[in-house]
Image 1 (cartoon, helix red, strand yellow):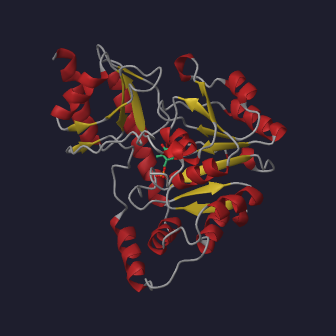
Image 2 (cartoon, rainbow, N blue to C red; image 1 turned 120 degrees about the vertical axis):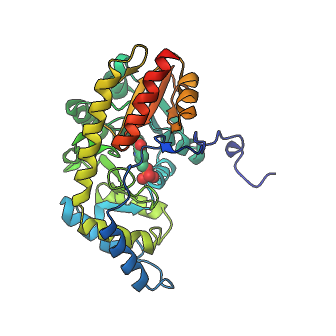
Length: 347
Ligand SMILES: *Cc1c(COP(=O)(O)O)cnc(C)c1O
């Protein structure tokens, strides 16, 4: 076959394998579906929607609403079916991608697909941000920085991000702060992008908004950067049904804080319990998951799965030997996880 660019053959598939289990703690989803009243309202609006008509070209109505809610210029917002698609668009557009290791795997995957050169800087001891090395490596291009960080759960300090934002301005690059987990940290780095067109932010509806299945995320950027990203994406990219559901949740966002509060409380409870585990070590997290170091990730994974609990192995990442990642689920799910976790110690 000579139809495709040669670099696309032999791309490693995205590291996800579907496994069935009664307690699903492997994808950092919300344990709760949308509140029934909101789901019913969305269904009513979907029934009235003319499905034969295209949606707005760049989701203008929703962008206006988000602009108003976030006090961000409407022209600086890009909506897409998932922030993963925005990451791909940014990677296609980028001169170069700068990334951390370990980090959210889609940044590297998107750069590979796009054929964009990529460099990565390893995290320091204790999953600290390698600020000096990043400042030195950031000579242009797009730096993807998840904060809170995945897959470690760490929250990098504001001063470090300020330094990177200034560096982005100096070298004409773009710092992209991926805030997928911000509701669980109570963090908001968007002030760094007010007055600095070299900083942008990714947000998602997949985590605290409990809409992983709906597929929606957005970019906050300067009007110039946002306009470029909109042109890289296909027109009419946000489906009408997705837009309708987002309209309902943006009119009634109160449930999001309840989801985030549950996750924070449950995360701290499970963290405290795991601290008493004879061989497993949990890391502090500012997200809706816990990274846990075990003596043997394969054995921990198999043991939990045998008890009906599905988690995600992370031991393929440099520096994460023995690690598994556990999504914070409902109280019942976390009780089941803890019970199984303590059984393995004596198995
Ligand atoms: C979950 C997650 C996302 C969300 O991607 P969507 O395509 O919006 O579902 C983005 N970034 C990080 C770091 C994530 O963990």
